[in-house]
Image 1 (spheres, each protein chain N blue to C red):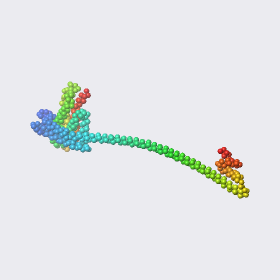
Image 2 (cartoon, each protein chain N blue to C red):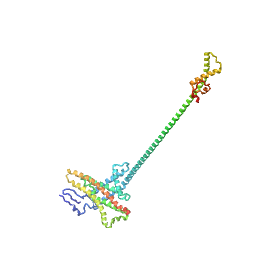
Image 3 (cartoon, chains in turn yellow, red):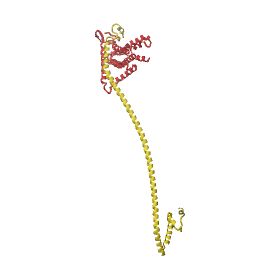
Image 4 (cartoon, chains in turn green, brown):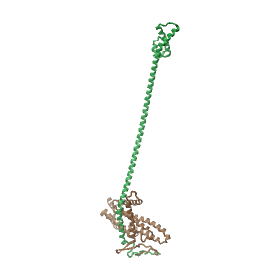
Amino acid sequence: MTSYNLAAAGGGGGNFLVPNATFFAELLIFLIVLGVIWRYVVPPVKRSMGERQEMIRQQIQESQQASKRLAEAEARYSAALAEARVEAAKIRETARADAQEIKDEMRQQAEQEVARIRERGDEQLATQREQVVRELRSELGKLAVTLAGRIVGESVADDARRAGTVDRFLDELQGMAAPESVPEQAKADGSVPVPNGRRKR
Amino acid sequence: MREYLLAAGGDVQVGEHLKWQVLGLAINADTVLSTAIAAVIVLGFGLYLAAKSKAKVPSGLQLAFESVTDQVERQVESNMGIRTAPFVVPLAISLFFFILIANWLSLVPHAFEHYVAPPTADVNLTFALSFFVIILVHVTGIRVNGKHYFRHFIEPYPVLLPLLVIEELVKPITLALRLFGNILAGTVMVGVLSLIPALASWLPISAWKLFDLFIGALQALIFALLTILYFGFATGSQDAEAAH
């Protein structure tokens, strides 16, 4: 059913494997294509591709710089944070020490104050007591003598005797109430019993 | 006008072309026409790219083109160094797209194939491309390496001179016939399949045309790649010289 007549093509001028004048037409067409591409297409395309690559390179560079700056800023931030923490700890420590110091000082002052006040109070008390004793000595003596004179009707004009009686009386009083008034005691004539502790002073 | 009858009773003819007589020379009119169509498409695409190249945000077409360009540049860089012959990059890209479009003209419906057949199914186009490329390769080799360029015919042994000469002579022929054969086979196959009654033939023909799409891209890629390799061989002997 099939008859191949290809072999017949060998003769004559028409083997399809052999180029004919079309060759030049084809070459011309391709050269035109190549020329137009070379002249009008390659330069702008090359330029724009170069520009775009440059742009991308620049963007990559910028982003790298940005991330570097970010890292730097983060480092600075954490350094500052650590420093601030140290500073805060120091301040807290100082404040605590100061507070302790102030507290101690104030306590000391208060104690001194208390001691001073107590001392003054004691002094005042002693002074008042002495005054009272002195007053009593003069007043009470007179009153007692008057009273005794009235009661017994005896004249006690003799001053010396009177003073001796009063003093003795007061010493007894004093011996019961306050052991402090040593000088008074020394003046006494010794007829009144005196506690041992006083002698030692 | 000759007919090569492949199937009796059918009308599958190989190497049959409409002819123009120009100055007494026969010119295959259909090949010239379809080559011109492919050229217009390629140039339209190229000029569109050039016009669009100012846009900041590239379109999908530009990105596809740029990925091809990147690939080609990498090939050229690894084979010969892009500085040696910078024109090889646009040449290879132009060849790739031109052959690609020419091959894909086989997608035109079968009814029109007498007017628009893939021009690469005609040896005239493939020989034109391959001779142009090979002559340019030799010219570039001589310009880059001077008289040292001819040394590669006697290296590593002078005895190999005849073989190396034959190799150089065969290069343009294989380059042309590889492309031609693949694309022609596709058209012949479609022609044979179209002998099947139309009700049943649409499926195998569609399948085969999809396959042609793949073959067309592959052959365009091979042609461009071999072009780069040949340029690499021709200019690379300088490096071998320097290495000695």
